Length: 246
Image (cartoon, rainbow, N blue to C red):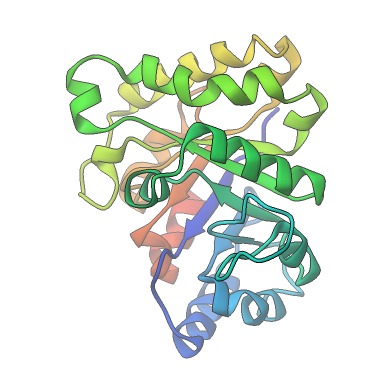
């Protein structure tokens, strides 16, 4: 049985003070019926890790370098993330793909860096509004998964979580209907059969796209949706814990 995960991506928001207040609010309302994780901006990772040291909430980074070390000014390696106590990182978020030109090959390289350092890779995939209107959502998902499926070993998938995020539903207030979300999650799981039936069964697939406490229960009730990658709502303790309680 796959355990639900609710992960909060803070994006480029917050301060040291607001992070502390947010985490106090979340810790006070923790729900142990699901796994929880937060992904703060890089400058606050150590602070957040310290604040959450006595909880089961995992701490992850929003990005990671595709290289191990060296002359890559401004980059942060998987080794560094491991060193400060992170347990996971996002890879291939749609904003990284669209704003910074991250390709499927770069996503594969970053995933490999995380796996080599015993970190969980939360790999994001999803289509744009234009691709959805053209009926290409399954083709896009298959393309974004192809290198991971071809190049990674079955054991690698023990440390991979997928997050389906329709780009048209991120920060827009629009949400895929539970039926739309379930359909693409089921397709993604069918693609994982190419690795193995076991990988298809055990890999958690999160939904990301304007998840709120009000719609979380209906989304999470779908058989192939294993939790949420939450954006704006993760900056509100009551809303984030409300999603967890859903």
